Image (cartoon, rainbow, N blue to C red; front, side, top):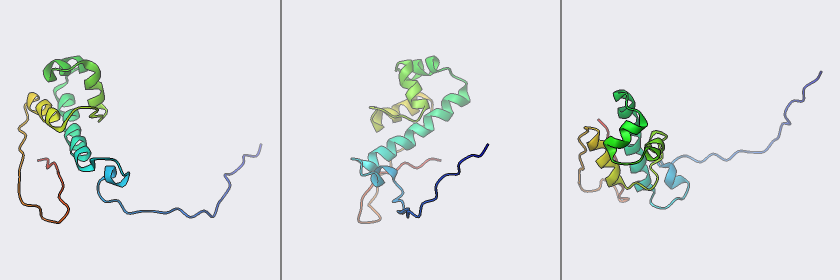
Length: 115
């Protein structure tokens, strides 16, 4: 029995260098804020896993319902603000620091530094 091999095309693929922010690259609104929320959300998952908390237990610690924890565990910040995500991190025993300094370049942006 012969299997068909995929057709080869000579179509050219256009590759565009990333700006470093996928939300900006996709043209979404508030890309810096979305990137900050993503970075904060990425900090929550390993803390919950490291502590061996169930999603229900984590929900009690964070003061939310279990489905919201499920979203956070899948890196979905949903409708949570950056401030609320920082509150979650402090509820999980993390120090969150905000630093304000003059911009180093013309385009001002927000960022999250993880240590």
